[in-house]
Length: 364
Image (cartoon, rainbow, N blue to C red):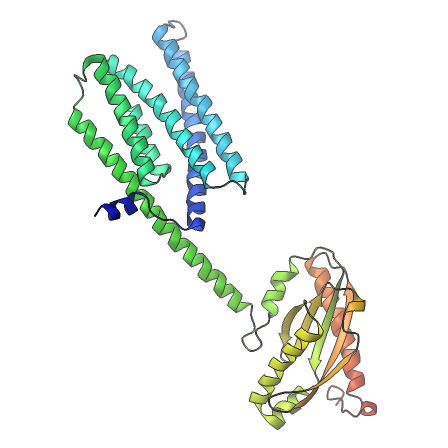
């Protein structure tokens, strides 16, 4: 029983989920700080104008108190924005910021409501701040229990020291403190559940996208992946190779589609060997695209490649067209690919010619 309680008060959280929860709370702090700054600034202006002709001690204290809240809200919004920009900041910095935010504004609320109590006014500020903390700033249950319980205890002791808490019902105050601590714990666990589900959904969507960008037969990238990669061009020198299996239709007709599929897989393996470290795409049908940043002198230099399929013993040959450029944009990459495709057509026209022992199906 004790172990279950301990695990509930200090649950294990996946680091990625914890990171999302930290940033979520920090964004909440920033937005709440900005909203409270606007509200309190308007209240400050109202109090100042309303008491301009009869400014007394109480009015000055109110102005100072509201001004303090405005200043601290500005500080909190700036600090939270700074932390959100720093990607290398760890979990402890987020926790420290949340604790700072809680202590500063809870202490301010305790001071305000203690003065309200002394003047027989309603104590709403402390409870409003507590509700705001529970809803928007999420602490681990044991940390939240210490902070929330401590804040309620400080306010109660201050009132009890003033008049023995004569106008405060201790049981109601205790129930409010306990409910607040429980609410923080429940919301923290809900955040774990929601962000865990969100991360799982994100990972699944990412896996599906990768599956959609992968050619199911050969296991290399497809045209959809090329569209993605084309957005990342940075102007570095690149060589594009357009590769086509010669007479692939005849091979399919003679040996069957199972042999044709195996030939496509073997071609992929061959390309990975003759163009190591490159990017490989099945461009369509029996056409492949290889992109590499290696210097031209380090790449395969011939315009043909002959091999025999290891499983079915099918003799095959590849025609290879290449082009070089330094594409810096989507359009420039596809211009490079177009030039490589034109070079491939020249090679195929030669290798399919009668002089080379072939028959040009395109010409026929």
